[in-house]
Image 1: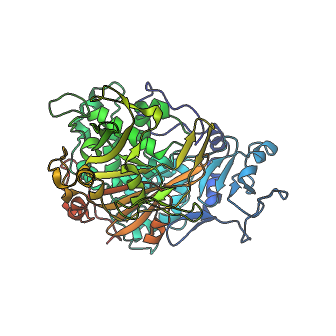
Image 2 (image 1 turned 90 degrees about the horizontal axis):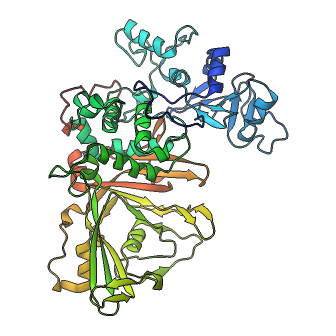
Image 3 (image 1 turned 90 degrees about the vertical axis):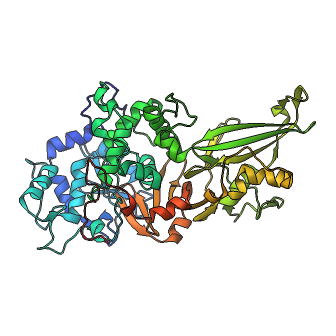
Length: 561
């Protein structure tokens, strides 16, 4: 989206969408919806529900700049004024040589793009034009005197029995998102300007069984929330998350815009408040921290992370154990640290086929990392460097030490973060690691528990290990994967969610069903597992979730199984 500073906390509480690009405002003032109506005739919808733009009278689009090295390759953009095609490199040159020709449409994704700002633009009116290709009857067009949203609302009121603007008794045209047997809760999220990092994580959270059940069963009451009614700015992040759940599980299949949530999150994370692309993992941690700050309290009523009863800690909080052993006397110092996720290094230099085996060197070319190898690397015994000597309480001096990490307590939802972005302060450079990582759909975390680590180290002489973990809760099932494609400077986040033993690709506003091979071949960045007992109880169905007394969340959806 148009690059700029986000609104300050003093902004109006009625804020709904980020400020639009000025070039977009100028275009709509001069031309109204003429360009949108012309684009509407060129929209083509694939069988899986994805909308693209075709160029008239030709099969292959070409950049209008004949000397362009990308004349017939890569992604192309259609000018809303003169309908000429350009590559990404020439979207900035075109407005310079043709005054007022600022706006383009990405023909691959059917999204607006500003050549002057060099960024994607979000416009709800344009999104409705795209969606009308799915759901509006033939002959339904936009007028300049009435917004598309108003026409849609008006049509719903005029025609009884119409769902998403369609008379199902008179036409066979149906929204492909609705026609497919997609489970309840699968709804696309509009990109509000480089917010794919946010949308991908939100899709994972929307389908995390215990997190989802909390909000759908009335765990938070937005209508009576003291923060929303008492605060001057009326901002409550938990209320906004609750609103997203209500919208996504309302039965409406049209893409949803989480603009109010984005604005509220900006107030909690001012350092990340911009229209620039952010890191999905950083957003995930920032969001959980914000949820904790908003509603976090311990069992004794005080705020803090210990025994916190906020939804973020109840679902994602675990405990890491760190054992540091003095190599001189054998004295071991143990510390416990709470964690919301586990960050793993890719096992690029070695892997352990089984617990207890020595590291096996791999050839970097064609090597394959595994999630088990990453967990082995995380929990392996390592010698601290000479510059990391720790003070031994027994020797009363700094000594060489051995350190080993293990998991003292497992969370209900296990979030694993793969470190794909490497930063070198010495070389002053950064890079992305594109190495493939193989990950299982069923995961047994027993070998990485503190009890297992200590039992392997000390044998059966140890009967108590100082942890409260249980082996019966160490088995997990995967339910979501957040992936990153592209480079460090220019990339895109997409999430895969698993429902009813089927996988769905959530690419901003687009939801498509994919096979397991597609998920396994993806470049995973964050992997989400839920305890198998909860996964089985959920049954990948919402029938077990009690209805909220405030709203009817489970509306029947036409065309869904």
